[in-house]
Image (cartoon, rainbow, N blue to C red; front, side):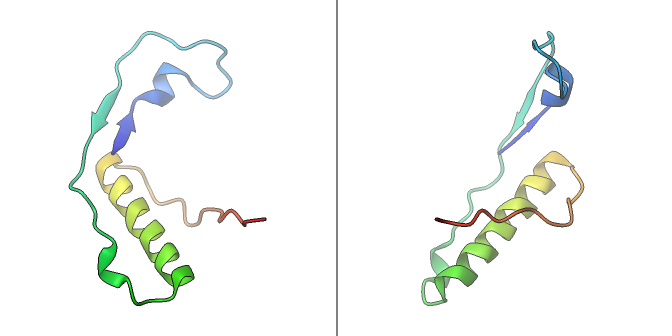
Length: 73
């Protein structure tokens, strides 16, 4: 799912939202059970990459190049 137009509704630094229109796009469901035998860390990274690629396709946004991985603990 991608939500478009939020940058116009409430730009960075704005205290209150502005009137406007938001578009929500739904993609096809993704399945991740096919790689059940692979190492967990590898599967998580590949699944995250697949989700980010699908969101970019729906939203038309450019790839950020990298995104931070939260560490547990």
